[in-house]
Amino acid sequence: MAIRIHTPLTPEEARKLKSGDSVLLTGTIYTARDAAHKRLCELVAKGEPLPFPVENAIIYFVGPSPTMPGQVIGSCGPTTSYRMDAYSPTLIRCGLTGMIGKGRRGPEVIEAMKECGAVYFGAIGGAAALMAECVTGVELVAYPDLESEAIRRLEVVDMPLTVVIDAEGNNLYETGPAAYLAGK
Image (cartoon, rainbow, N blue to C red):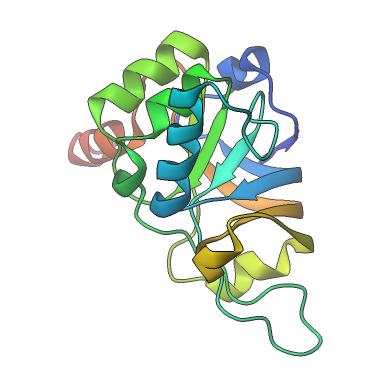
C-alpha cells in the first residue's frame, strides 16, 4: 500500500520514509535540471537568495515537453539524476529534503542526504504522459531562457514515486538486486 505524503516535506518526515516505500505525493514541487542547478548553486555561493523556497522542498529533475492545447503540462518524465550530483549536496545543505529522478546517485549526495534528512525518489521512467496526469498546475518561476529546463512550480496530486534512497542511505539500487539474487 502506498504512503500518502504532502509537501512541504520536513527532514523529520523524510526520515520516516524507507528505501522501497511506494508513495503518492501531493503538493508543490519544483522542476530543475543541470543548467538550473548550476545557477542555483552560483546564487548560494554568492550568498544571494534563491528564486524559490528550497527549505523542505522537493525538486523534480525534469524538462517537460511542450504543452498541447487542453493540457496543463506536456509529458514530464524524469531525467537521469547523476547530472545533478555536483549540485545536489549544496541544495540539500540549504534545506532541500526531496529529489525526484531516475538512476543512481553519487556518494557525496547520499552523505548529504544522511547528514540533513533528505530522500531520493524514483519516478517511472518511460511513462512521461502518466506523470503529466498528476500535474494540476504549473507556474514559471525562474530562468525562462532555459526553455523546457526553466524552473517551474508544479502542483501535483498522487504522483506515484518510490523511495530509492532513504535518509539513512539505504539504497534500493543495491538492496533490490541483492534481495532478488537471494531469492527474496
